Length: 503
Image (cartoon, rainbow, N blue to C red; front, side, top):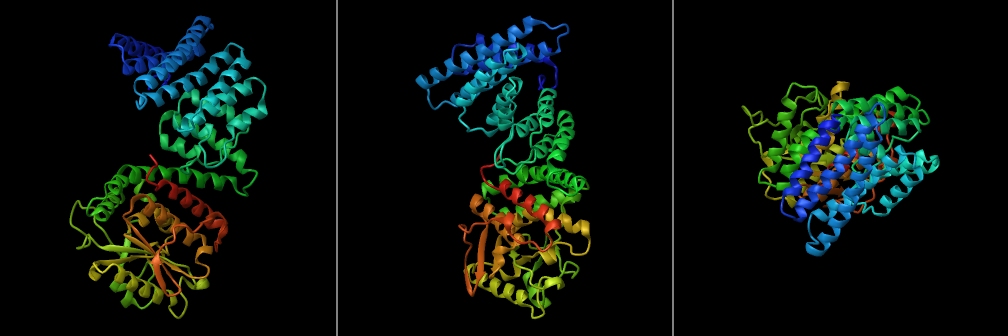
């Protein structure tokens, strides 16, 4: 932390002491690993001190060279020792990473000495050693390789390293994950070079998302740099760049809140699969929403309606019908006597044209009842009195525009709190982007945790959802393309966040 906070003298002294203490320990893989780690970090702190020295102090740069080269040698020796003594040791992968990081950082020393060709050579060697197991390490390495190429006058090759395709962690993303004054200077270099910051990593996060997620003073300084680069990219494709930037910034803040509620609170429940998991998920969300904070105002409450009320209503109810139920936060008196309600998410196509989701004959209302009755037959243990439904026309506010937006933003969290989904499949169901994104969200949850159910009601048959169905959401139809496409794209990225293995 001291080095990232620009307290380089303090950082160097701390790393030096860390290395000294490790050297006093009996020789072991653990102590050698600690020495290796400390000397490399000391070397980078020394390089930072050289950057600040006025007048320039060549002895600091020489010391940084020596310390980083020692890190490389120690990391290589440590790898050989581990392979001989304990090939399954966790320190093997660490030593491999430390070697790569030291080589990448050494390129900065070569550039500072005017030896740019040597910097490129070392960076190329680092690339050959990449295992690609850690996307962030790989992305950092891409930055240093591009930086060496850039300073060696190989601009086009540098941009090839810095411009990453969507689906991979880019150099800009890696720098935003670990914000510092130094990393912001690197970001500025890439922004000025015209690097495309408008891409997403394997988890659906952008450089802007990572800067907002980091939420530190240096991260906040990074945001204008990223925003400027985004503007340059969006000017080529967007009619309203300011509006696009506002959308991206709002989505980034939403993802920060998703991380808080889902990553930190809901995912642990899903992984443990305790009895009463759905009740616990709903209490977590209700507690989060009950807080009078900016974050609470970004999502709507989780509403549902009793199945019996739905049947008796005689048509698809709108959000203003007065039938809404919600779960308590478990902290006071309950709002609903039966906290173990089984809620089914109904995914269906709107067929009423401009007059709502259903036609005059109530086709979708009847289909929902028919499908739920089939669901009850394959789940005979269900208590009909505890059965509830979630459907967009009722559970997402259809009158208040801001509240409607909050309901759409909360869609992945609503899917998460429903025990099951029923897709009312017809000839064009999978051609509609909203239907497909709902399925994408539920599939990610079903495949990751094994707690939820997903069923398809199609042409009289009722069967488990087809997980092999290809969902190319980006090319599917939307009634209001300009208004809804950013929301769909955001939700597609959110589906990646739901997977079991994302940390």
